[in-house]
Amino acid sequence: MALATYNGSGYLQRQLTSLAEQTLPPFELVVFDDGSDDDTHRIVAAFAAKAPFPVRHQVNAERLGYADNFLAAAQACFGTYIAFCDQDDVWHPQKLERCVGVLKQEQAVLCTHTAGLIDGDGIAIGSLSQNITETRVWSARKLPPWDVFLGFTQVFDRRLLDLVAPARRGYDNHARGSMLAHDRWIYVLGTNLGRTVTLAEPLAHYRQHGANLYGGRRKSLMTRLRGKLVGSAEALRTYASIAAHRAEIFLDVAERQPDDVFAPEARIASEWWAEIAATFLKRAELYEHPEFTGRIGRMCALLAERLYRPVTRGGLGLNVLFKDIILGVFGLRFSPPMSSKLGSS
Image (cartoon, rainbow, N blue to C red; front, side):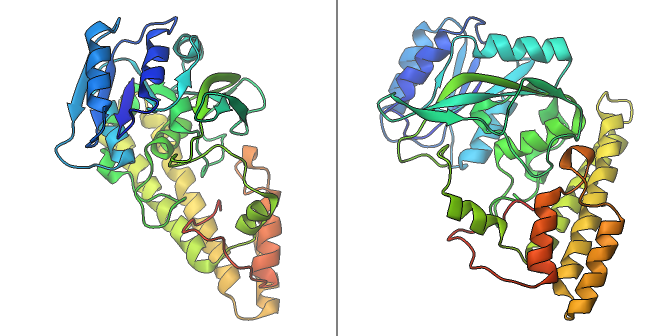
């Protein structure tokens, strides 16, 4: 398990207790602290002294930020499978046993699950589905390319971390100008290079206490609609650039280690992301065309290429078709939400 901490004394003890209560004992717990100045160090040290599994604790010489801290902790792990662990959640006792069991059974590289939402006092306030409606095994590249499963729900094959140096992971499609978040990076690697198992089982409590970097509460209808109806050629070209970078990364994986078990899927993933990059450039050209008749023609060309087929069949989906007609063809513009997010696609 890879636990990233920073001033987590308020809820850390309850999380550590839930780790010790796992029906499948963890192989180890690696804790990387990013410069806490509260009681985090004391709590971890006290837990390590009596934990039923090895605990290694490191204080970073300089602040890494949450994403790099998580990835650094994960790279320091020696186990076959790794689980990201937030400092303020509570795991169900069967979480590791259930996730590791299906990873082995299905020969998968990534497992995720649903969760319950709790407040700062541990009282249930809702649920987090992550769009998981059933327990299912997904083949490589059958899940949406730009999506994510939150880190605390991920258990993944340790070998994924050795394929590409974290510094090469590229920019985040979700937050402009930021490096890809740790969980989005594992999502990219896992969903492109092997099987992913989604469990429709709430195997953890996701705590919502006002200081979360990311929350599980559902956004308002207006916020969600505004997010879907914001788009520009610049954003589409940014997506194209990110996709091209991922194509390059996967090609490098395939060519650098041609006999590796992940090489065949990496080569296919490279071609897939190159196609995605080309698609987003075509969409950008639609948005940029100055004449309405020209935009109509470009939309007809995109439809002829069947680019808006269902996401599960490698297409953009009807939601994106709706967006491209409104924003691309008719050129309607909506005020963006108050954030730096690029949107979904």
